[in-house]
Image (tube, rainbow, N blue to C red):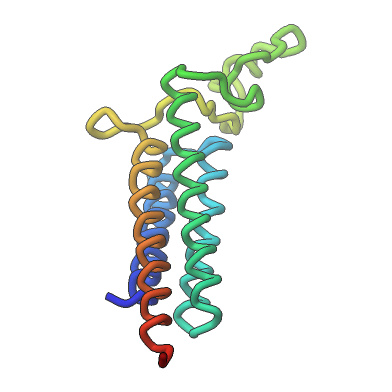
Length: 166
């Protein structure tokens, strides 16, 4: 496969992961803040794939895709560590450091209020398969995609060198 083809494959992988996140959300698994953070780099990698498809600055957009996939993989590892209590996560979505003194009963018991609760905790695993959470699966597959992007860069450089007459 050429570097461009590998880049498009990796962009397709980010598309699949992002679509899977939206399907889980449609099935009722509301995303936490860190889940949302993991979506942005996938969107950037998809954009890089679009620019690759139309032939603009292949090495630049291969690099953007690689950095994007690596970034979401790192966020996924960080989120997994928060879920597994390996380290502290952001206080805004883990419940640590919250001040309960000014909260009402309906604030503490979302089922007591008339509307749905908007707070999804980042340190709680909502779904897992083979003992891995969604954040863990995202980290794993995103690392694979980052590797594909890097291979695409290597192939594109090799193709460029072989095309230059000596």
